[in-house]
Amino acid sequence: MKQWTVLLLVMVLFVGSCQNSNSAKSTVHNGKVSDAQNEEELKSQAQLIVQFSSQALLGKLQKSIGEQGIAGAVDFCKLEADAITDSLSLAFGVDIKRISSKNRNPNNAPNSEEKKYLDQFESEGELALPILVKTEDRFTYFAPIRLAGGLCLNCHGKLDESMTLEQFEHIKEMYPEDKATGYSLGDLRGMWKITYN
Ligand code: HEC
Image 1 (cartoon, protein in one colour):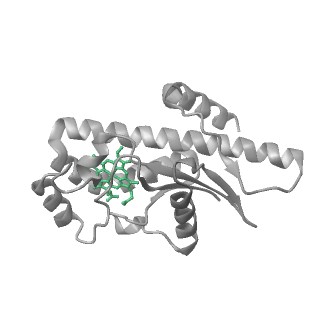
Image 2: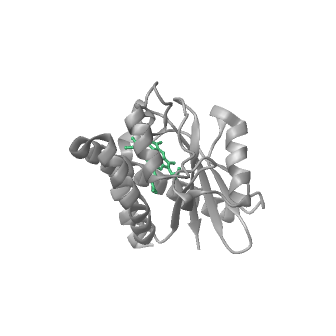
């Protein structure tokens, strides 16, 4: 617990300026105040883990684009994205995943339960908020990922609008099964899934 407190403090200092004020909603209603408090704490932790992980990935992506351009950054993501989320999972002691119905990495395709939450976020549109789900043996946190900036469209946008033919073809070459183009700003790109085991 002490470790967590130190870690959270570091995270708050690190991502403090980028926090958004969205409060997560919970699907758990069992009426017990202490349980509800624990769940609130868990939600806050998960929210910080998501913010930290987003910043970590974005930081590496921006550095890679700066050093190697868009095509080089695609190669970097293919090599490193999974490794980065795996090492963050290890550091935080939770399982961290990014999942999308229109996935690029085949590992990020949803199972039927995950698809349910993606569909829910999609149907709620801009009002979609993160959810903490309690099952018999674990808590899982789901948070929507939106295409918030023009940067994302370089690799997830539309051919001839935000992606050149060269960029588009390079991605299709690296990911023959790719479904992750054709997006516009503000679209739901997928979701974070944080599992407490
Ligand atoms: C330089 C190109 C590039 C840019 C810019 C980029 N992405 Fe990606 N994105 C990728 C690649 C490549 C993958 C697949 C990584 C892998 O193999 O795990 C990916 C995967 C993802 C995934 C995981 C789901 C999936 O489809 O596999 C999400 C979510 C995502 N990107 C969101 C974003 C968002 C949001 C932005 C803007 C902040 C962004 N991306 C910017 C190239 C990019």
